[in-house]
Amino acid sequence: MDNEVFRVEGVSKMFGAFQALNDVSLGVRHGEVLAIIGPNGAGKTTFVNIVSGVFGPSRGRVLLEGADITAFSPQRRTRLGLSRTFQITSLFGGMTVAEHMQLAVRGGDTLGHERAELLEEMGLAGSAPRPVDTLSHGDQRILEMAMAMATKPKVLLLDEPTAGMSVAETDTMIRLICDRLRGKVGVIIIEHDMSVVTQTSDRVTVLAAGAVAASGSPEAVLRDPLVKELYLGS
Ligand code: ADP
Image (tube, rainbow, N blue to C red; front, side):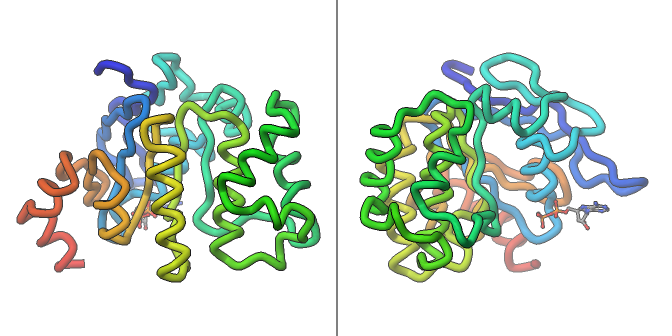
């Protein structure tokens, strides 16, 4: 595929005798937002863990810009340009927003003024000196995205970025994904909220029972009778 920055190829995962992922292959192009959706138990979390390097696949490969990173640690993946955000925020309560931004790029090459610019763009500049536990849930999640962006990723994995957010916070997150990420980096977004999917994604892949059940434009995929059945049935 042209301009492809990330690919999983033939990925399967066994937990004992249970097959959580079965021969999943997909790719993301530079600048593209790919949504991964699927009912509970479809294998989305397992997929995220394999992409980010929490554990390896039983079979198959993970490729970043064509290089095989299947055996690499999460830290090494981040250094090479594959960053992620977490479903549950993983911030340190007593530390400030600015300190978190420094932590994000420890050993990296993002300069102080670049970090300040990122916070500005994310609407968090005024919060730089505040301890993170004084931020709203939405702002904490936006800070996590700013931290991931500060590592200058080529591919960004967003794990349910709008989970637990208010309507207004969700709208802010959608705008950030569309303005800051889409067209600039490759994005994989795991998302339950179909309205977020249709507003942010170029393409959607549906996982069901550990396999790719459908793939295409958001409009086509959400019209697919199989997909409707999966969601009504879940
Ligand atoms: P999703 O995130 O789409 O809800 P998961 O990836 O969490 O799906 O889980 C997919 C399937 O794999 C589920 O049936 C789940 O019970 C099973 N599973 C996930 N992790 C483990 C594990 N560590 N050991 C055994 N089974 C697991």
